[in-house]
Amino acid sequence: MKMQEAWFYEEYGPKEVLKLGILPIPTPQHNQLLVQVHAAALNPIDVKRRQSPIFPSDFPAVPGCDMAGVVIGKGVDVTKFDIGDEVYGNIQDFNNGEKPKQLGTLAQFIVVEESLVSRKPKCLSFEEAASLPLALQTAIEGFTTAGFKKGQTIFVVGGAGGVGTLVVQLAKHFYGASYVVASCSTPKLEFVKQLGADKVVDYTKTKYEDIEEKFDFLYDTIGDCKKSFVVAKNDGAIVDITWPPSHPRAVYSSLTVSGESLEKLRPYLECKKLKPEIDPTGPYHFNDVIEAFRYLETGRARGKVVVSCFPLVDPHSPILSRVNSKIGVNGLSEDIYMK
Image (cartoon, rainbow, N blue to C red):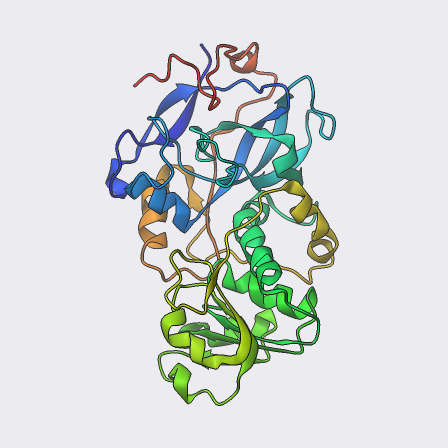
């Protein structure tokens, strides 16, 4: 049995339940790619899944949705990608009615359906690419949910966060907003301004009710719409990406997971109108995943928390020859793991 290093947990709980150990290398099924992970990003959903069974999964469970890496194997029905392609994507589709993959992206090797990934833009590092998928797909879905139209105005709550940084940029450069205002804390004001916001509000000094302007679209990325709703016009759209929304007018927005959504934004990434933002405390080393989660859970991240320096294996190494073919429905072997 071919083995790999991975972070996993065998019970729900705080970050301390995570352990670095050995798991089988999965084998791609007919429509899947086997990807050697070079970088991954952490998301709040990884924390929530680890803390409680919101999406029940089998143990041991490997956290992680976002990744960027290199294709080193593929199923017989794969048509879009070849061995050696650099790809990135969100491998977990929580809306498909199935259990999440047991093997998330905090592992040396993962399997993922080819429909969920896209070719990595050459202008992006693996770390930059890994920071994008889930947050970018979430950001896009919010605009779709709101029915946002070119020329409308938008107020972004949490403009410095992983999703917020992308919402600000998308509003300005992709959706054609006429006026973009975002909120953040004092140290991040200039950072959010540089993303393209026309105006930045310091939420530590200004209350929502003191903002005289009203907006066509309130995009709340932090779940504060029980207070922030006042900046929306009476007929304005209010979207909250946290569940449940904290105001009755707010509509919850999740995400559509697909490689196609990433591919549509390739031109904007390549011309750098849309820029990944990695928190300056990172990227964190693969060995420091617990510290990375500790920082993520403070809620102070600026952009995305990224993990890099994965242990890499030569694709021609004997360890990857005839990888385990006795796989279960979630991509791990039935003989699940070794300590």
